[in-house]
Image 1 (cartoon, rainbow, N blue to C red):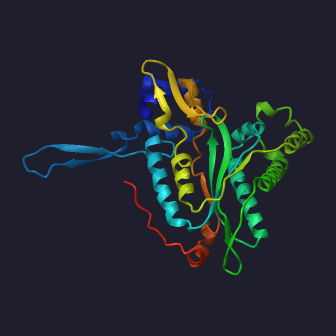
Image 2 (cartoon, rainbow, N blue to C red; image 1 turned 90 degrees about the vertical axis):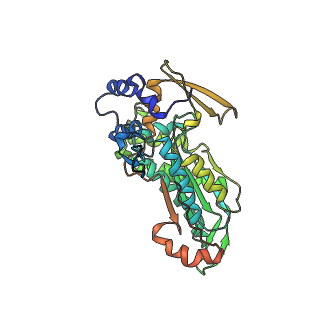
Image 3 (cartoon, one colour; image 1 turned 180 degrees about the vertical axis):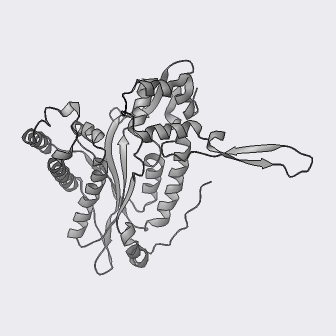
Amino acid sequence: MRPRFADIFQQGNRWLNWLEKQPEGAVRPVVIESVTKIMACGTTLMGYTQWCCSTPDCCHTKKVCFRCKSRSCPHCGVKAGAQWIQYLLSLVPDCPWQHIVFTLPCQYWSLVFHNRWLLAEMSRIAADVILEICHQADVEPGIFTVIHTWGRDQQWHPHIHLSTTAGGVTSGHTWKNLHFYARKVMSMWRYRITRLLSRKYPDLVMPDALAAEGSSKREWNRFLDTHYRRGWNVNVSRVMDNATHVAVYFGSYLKKPPVPMSLLEHYAGQDEIGLRYNSHRTKREEYLLMSGDEFMERFSWHVADKGFRMVRYYGFLSPAKRRLLEEVVYIITETVRKTAMQIT
């Protein structure tokens, strides 16, 4: 039986019981706030409007409860994702695009978990790699990124999804096509991340898993050098004719909450939650059975900090350069601006 998402937290006081087991200060306030909103979503606790029949002798009324609008709420997140697709399609030019996924060695994942500010740095560096390649070719591209912290099995897996125009605007206000290749992108990404982690060593909170490697700056650089010598996974897509496919992918997969209701199964009376997902490793649908505590913990990992921007724009899509987009890019790409449809 598939539950209402809030039921998973509420049944048997599962959320409160899990919360009481955690050390003081271990659960971020934004997680508590998000779960509280999710449990109240669509109920009178969020407030409501009351509609009354206009017929004088009829006393029928109906309450329409407000939604929580939390980024982590499956119901509200689906709507936000659909609305974002419409916004993106109204913004981006009609030109070729490429999609790139930037990942880290798995040995670095726990480091990002304990230093969440690195997520913003990862997005910036991914965009800087593409911007540098483009600037060498005298073009200004349009780029947007989505910061992702989960894999399909809801484990902690920080990575960056980036989409860029396959080319850009030259200084002479003409369009120049440009393709991106995995080997070059990977080497630039690897170098910049390694340099960042070396430079920021004094600011890093070392997880227990890296206690020995982070015991001194010398040991830390040795650890970084070991992984620098290995290949990193950077996946570069084929060139797509327009941004429609990219926007739909981002909206249907990336701009949704980490736990989609369509993949969850829950068995009443048992403290177990089932998750169906397509495994990258086996290329088949797999089934993961989690305890209630394990589900709570995984969910808490992926709640974004308050005010943290999961989607970021660079190049001529950045707010500072939108004038270039409107006055030059739309004209030379013959893009007809669309009005973003409002999702109700």
